[in-house]
Image 1 (cartoon, one colour):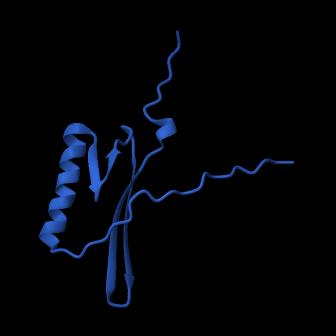
Image 2 (cartoon, rainbow, N blue to C red):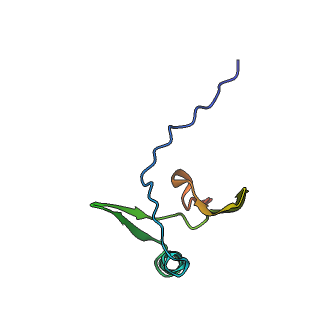
Length: 92
C-alpha cells in the first residue's frame, strides 16, 4: 500500500488589489526588484500588519499572460521552499 503525501493547507497571508496608473504600478515592481537585488528581502506592510519577504537564494520564476475576451492578466510569481532554503551538502 502506497502512502499519499498530503500537502499542507494553503494560507493566504496577503490578498490586496488596488487600481493605479501603469507608471505607479511599475514603481512598486521596481522597488521590489531593487530590494531583492540589493538586500535579498523586503518588508510588505498592509494596514497594521507587516510581512518580511525573504526568499531563498534559488527561486522559481513564473510569468503568465492570460486573455479572457478583451481583458488581459499578466502575472509574475516567485516561488521558493523555506524548508529547502540554501541547503548545502558537505562531506567531512
